[in-house]
Image (cartoon, rainbow, N blue to C red; front, side, top):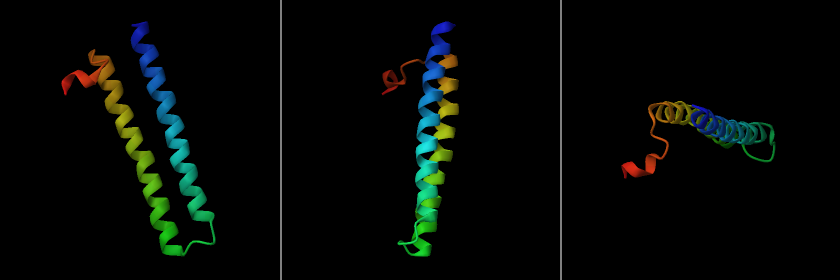
Length: 76
């Protein structure tokens, strides 16, 4: 069980890092005045969508770890 906790903890830490990175980039795009408005909105929306996607991937990865699929590359 502790092995699963360590793998889940690692996945959560990486997902939080990437979510903060994507959300930070989205915020930078919103507040940058040198880029035209519509492009800023599109880039920011893309970054926030990537952050939401990372959360979905994290949920799936936690589900895989709990089922015992610690190395999902064996499926391919």
